[in-house]
Length: 148
Image (cartoon, rainbow, N blue to C red; front, top):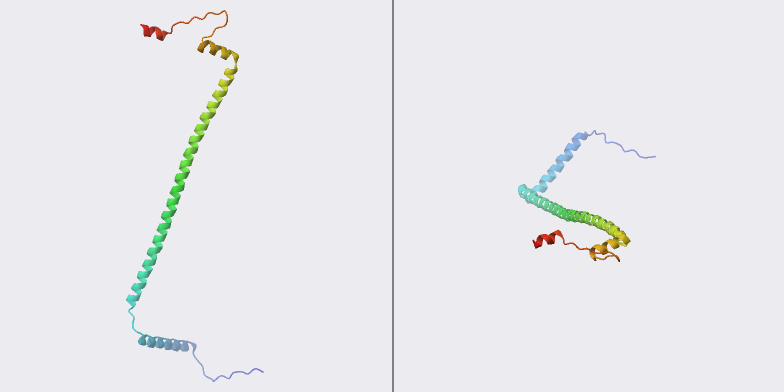
């Protein structure tokens, strides 16, 4: 069988016991304070405030530096993108011009192969005639005006 503790027959008020315990703690703390050297609270708080301010300044400067670096990188990339877009538009315009020139050259190639075109060019540029034809060369109006 388990032994039961016998109570001493006294009644303890819980609230009073807590108060007494707190009073004892406060008394011990006061004794410790008296034995230690007194430190001015204002000096300690000023030093901690200074340290806190320095930490905040460092933190702020790091954030600002990071922001500046980020903005510089963003500006550099934006400049590259804009430059590439402009170059792309120029190249597309050049491509269209070259495609148009290609169409014209294909058309001219078809004309050059045509015998009628060859004959016409021989008559105009080389002043050639068919056998039995007579070529009459008349002075241009510009030459007449120059002579006058």
